[in-house]
Image (cartoon, rainbow, N blue to C red; front, side, top):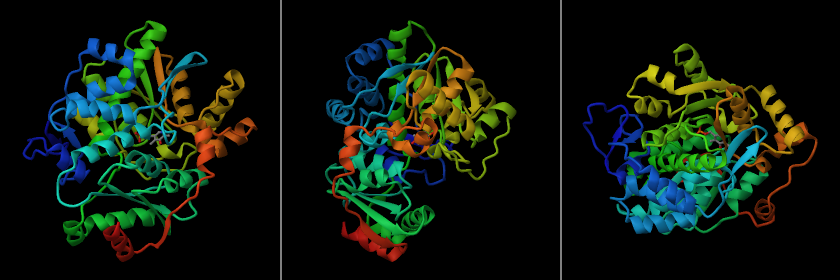
Length: 429
Ligand SMILES: *Cc1c(COP(=O)(O)O)cnc(C)c1O
């Protein structure tokens, strides 16, 4: 399988999987997409979903990556990555697919875990790859866990000292081994700027194989299509219905665009609801036909605080670059902070169900839409106790793995927000 940039409509420049993964973003600024979308045999997919998530994921991954990675090896890796449950639960009158039972308790584990193991298998090139990522919390922990103990790969994570939650810091700094967290004297913007400066330093990059693991990377995007197949299977078993509409709490639209990819692989869905917080550029586009990216505003569902979603281009590409087709496929819903709080409260009071603020956006959109289907839950409530507790009046219990983590020794290196210091560190890992 070859990959092209979304901006390269003439298909002038093809990239191998390894090249596309290492570059992250195409040289023309577009996003990588596959040369064709492989078709899944739904009878096979349903049978494998009945076996395990790993069996299903191995089959679907093989359709994309079977030429680059031995399918038997791919299957073995799936069993290592996806060794946690993925339940469909009934919440009130709705269903939700709980994507938050992975190692860092958020759905980003599905993409980051996959990318970590695949980068290890792809190998090749000169020198040891170094994955460099700036994080304000969630991405860093998912990447750290996804790449932990992957042979031959080192991971350098930059986070702003004193500006992330204790739990998030624990998730990044208690692994050790090939994971190197740096607590930077500065803000998240300083961390991001430093990473950009390293990527812009051609002389340094000629000597060191640095790449990023951000959410637009092909190896984080494609595996997110697989859980739509699994959710479909569970929902059909539970309800006997067909063509479910899937509600996706969205920020950068990696998750939702992966659902659209699943549909084009042959998954018979009824459509999607793009559920946003107050950063509603996409719902606004669906309503008015005008796409107006802008600066983001802070909300309670902060992992969705994105004002210019990178994957909008992939969604358009999946619709043959026809904005009207995209408007036909998605419905939109906007959920402000007041409604997020009300929803968390309602779910707790009526059903005794604790919902994190991102998943609450999904529930609110799902009840408003009223269509048969399910919504995606993207984070575990224990990660957002500081939002939930003031609403419900009770502490949110920590799962044992998270409680245990906070007792482990933490290690990270302090660093000034300085390019020279960062490059010296990378050269030394
Ligand atoms: C990243 C994230 C989202 C948004 O997902 P996108 O793919 O960026 O749309 C939603 N919820 C949680 C908890 C997240 O971490």
